[in-house]
Length: 425
Ligand code: PA5
Image 1 (tube, rainbow, N blue to C red):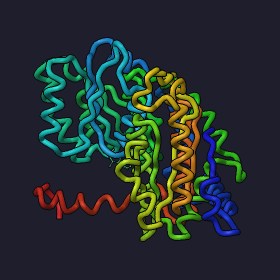
Image 2: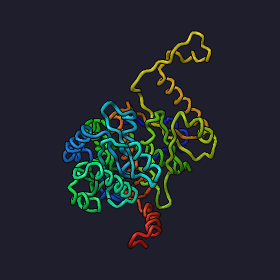
Image 3: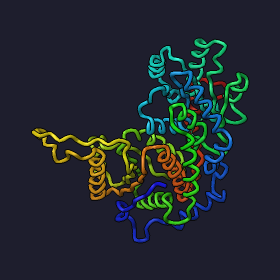
Image 4: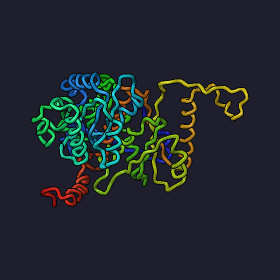
């Protein structure tokens, strides 16, 4: 499990402190299915279920793609996109020898980005993984038509063999198309919403193609969810959920998530969707934002240190780095840096993180640290399970349904009407 350190938040708590009784009640509602949106809590059992059903087939499909193609085009948006991208950038920021390139499209409506991707793809052999639970989302549907056409031009009769569809088990346009073309399909389970789906084929197939050991991820996640069932204030998910709700009650209504690993950038995007879409409703919610340290200390640092005191800060820290790089000694010391010579850069980063924490706390920003042992499959699984669990508990604590997203429909209605979609009003 991850460790949560609230020492940088404690001085901002009232004497009563975070409400762990409410965290317990929220956890119980989640576990016994008596809370709002209980039909969408299948993610709690998702790793075990995937292991028993689709995991072998996901790995086989990934091996087929890896053996024949130089690229995988992943088409999806929101919960059908961010988790896979977060995982791949965190764990495989540089493709290894023999790893196909992974291109993400369907996450925008940009002619230029589409054309750039087509240019990068060039004449590489490629496969497509189209991911859409509803099967009707405009952005991925637009990209999918374009890349299907490209596959047909390139592979003719064999094009269908290069398409893998991850969608609803029974319904939707994508499911109907997949059935008629006999594409290999994977399921987004009925009881799992998009933003909680990364540990299904939605995330696992692109991750496996990128060379991530998804069996290790799933085995670790099974253990993580079991451990996170702990019913006490020692549960890191309770600590984080209760602390942020307590701080929210005191007027801290923006949370910045930071990390000292640039490869964490898309995990932060995944986290923003998870928390933003789960909690921002009924006039309530903590606005989730992200920063990348140390880069953003030189751009956002001023605001964090002394802007409006409504920010709370959560920092993900990896205890161990994958590599060691000792800073060289230079006899002349012309740049004056010998005071850090001989130290690992990671050690310098840890000192910087401690210094930033102290400065931000002194400046009035409550600080919470989430410590993960390492940037590997187990660390990824620990983060996903922890953040999902804490999000559901936090949402229930604030009295909202953390599993719906009714607000997302508003712009779609306008857009479809303005584009002249038949039947749109
Ligand atoms: O979390 C969600 O439900 C959304 O972000 C969806 O994942 C996103 O809108 C994409 O939807 P779909 O998978 O149906 O194309």
